[in-house]
Amino acid sequence: MTDRDKLLLYVDGNLSAEHVREIEARIAEDAEFRAEYDLLRQVQRRLRQRPMASSPGLWDGVQAQIREESLWNSLVWAGKRLVPLAAAAAVIFMVLIDNGDTEANTVSDYLDSQTEMVLSEVQADSLIIYPE
Image (tube, rainbow, N blue to C red; front, side, top):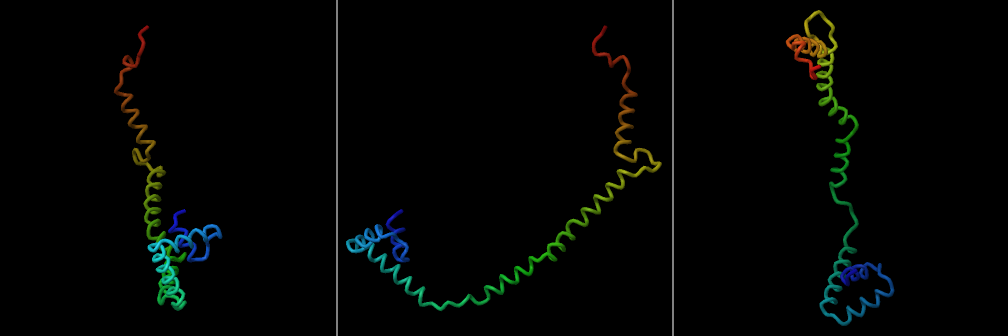
């Protein structure tokens, strides 16, 4: 802990007895340190003289922000963002599970038809890997 840190604690009255003696000795012998101590005491006196009133408008702004972040506003936000996504997902899901009479109406049917097409073009002789 630096002497400046100790000085701040000394001004606030939060310094141990051992360190109090050190700081008081330094204040007595060092003019620059004493000037800093005097400045801190002056600031502390002025802060104590100031009226303890809350800042005007501060709570009003905080309260308005709290009201804006209510559960209802969160639900509105979710509705605006999630409902269109859910609708799109439902459409895609319906297209995928539709079992109508149309050809290749599901992903599985499409992949099956592509596999059959590829296998029909492959000759049986070309599948032998190790000749006998």
